[in-house]
Amino acid sequence: MMTRPRSIIDREMKQEAPLIQASRLAGGRIPSLDGLRAIAIAGVIFTHAMAKTNYSRYWIPYITGVAGTLGVQIFFGISGFLITILLFRERMRTGSISIRGFYLRRILRIIPAYVGYLAAIAGLAMAGLLNIRWQEWAYVLTYTTNWAYKDVQWVLGHTWTLSLEEQFYLFWPSLFLWISGRQLRRLLVGYLVAAPLFRLAAKIAFPDYFLLRYTSAPACMDSMAVGCLLAMAVFHGIHAKGWLERLRKAPNLTFLASAIVLCSSLVAGLIAPPYMLLIGRTIDALAIGSLIWAAVNLQHGMLFRMLNSKPFAAVGILSYSLYLWQQLFLFPNCTWLVCRPPWSILLAMVAAIASYFIIEMPFLRLKDRLGSRRHGST
Image 1 (spheres, rainbow, N blue to C red):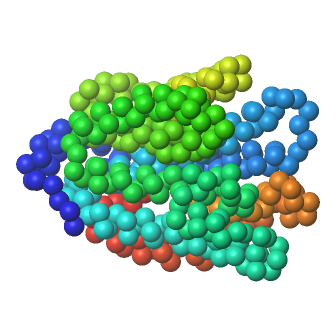
Image 2: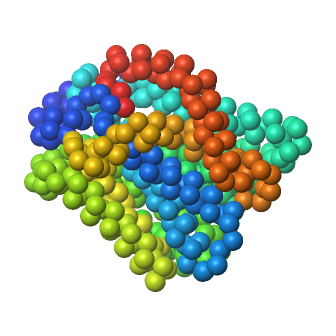
Image 3: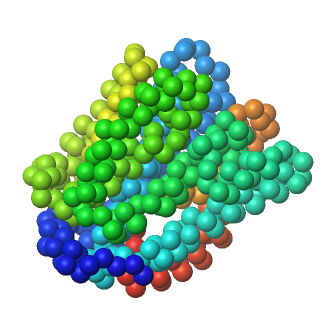
């Protein structure tokens, strides 16, 4: 276990949590976030399902593509928010952060389902139904697909988002442990300022290497950064306290306003494509952060009932497995019945349910037993 000087921890904990109890973030599962995950995975599936149709207007591919992109960005935002919340919870309960424990819990949460999906792909490759090159296996096994997206075929292409998350997990806990809250906030804000400039520079210097400005870590972690900043604002809410408190008191309005901003950004990107390259993704990230904060604070009303309904919650819980398996069944060039909506979506759901209960659940129970010793679960 790695620890920081107790004086630093005590000083920072005196500043923590003016909004924690009000927003129910001190422990336990956070309501409504599974529903938000359901919306995110629906956007991804919608985009991939529409890729199998014939477009009649030039703007339809753009709109459907943005739906999937926003879904992925929502996943990123939730990930940054929850991981930072978990780190705060652990430090508040124990006075330290166990880097080893963090990675063990992440491995138990992520790797089993991932290995299960890759094993299925390997089986299809051995049966001669897929041709996966060794370079592709190297990328997916080392979580570096986001740097080589063009060299990876469809059934493994979605692992670029998982690669980006793993790269985030690689450095964020250590930064959280060793850098003060003020320095971390400055670092995150600095990233949000620098990311659009990086995307512009990448476009100018390497116009043919689109991965550098669309899937690389320096270019597309805006939503993760905002999620981390939101969690830090909750626990170190000195300057953001008034702003967060106002948003907390009107979560339905905040949710709808954030959705309007995201839709407006979609239209702006259609009218002026450079908008998304420069500031569009950062603005979307800020709107997604507000969306997450609103979802966390919903306690009643239509939105609360929808996000916490059994169908939304079930899809949200299955979202990781569903994200893995939808890629196989929504293969764009596949003409088999199993690849055609709605059968492809139904089969992806069946595969996700099987993955969750057969592969994930035993490891999740082990993760929960380990996590209960140090902090509440998500």
